[in-house]
Image (cartoon, rainbow, N blue to C red; front, top):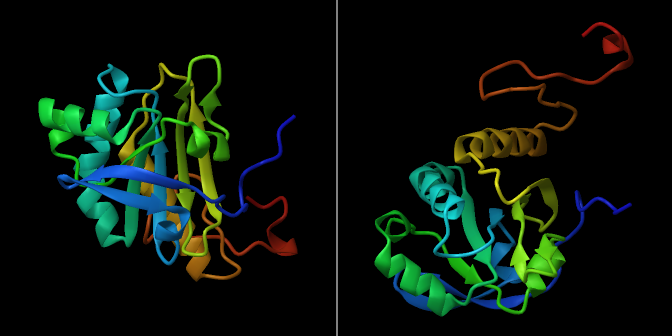
Length: 189
């Protein structure tokens, strides 16, 4: 049985990312002070992965408006990320950093490394400005994710962080009622 990663603090890492035409250094320190999404996928030049990364790119402006930075991560190198970016119309629209994790350190930090394959599972992690993991979702390789669903989860995480004593019920979206847990609610929902 594994211990939950929820509410744990980011572990240290240093990596190189391909971002807006440049190679840039990224560490866990870059994720502090704002909401972040770390979005793991198995490999560049594959099948489901470009659909997910393209979907995330389509929602990137909305996430930025919410104060969220996105970091995609695979065990490919930053050089491979550049080559994929340069050769694919879908990947070319990405504006968020694409982190290379060829040693698997970041993938292991988040518990998504498939050791026998040297690849990461499809893992999505939402991290608050203090560096604590607030959402963790891991998929098998054949199951693609939805950035729209992720946006709603981040909205709920941000709401709960800003409204002490309130929680968001299932399928909550901004503007809908929340709950204030109390003895009076027990058995009445």
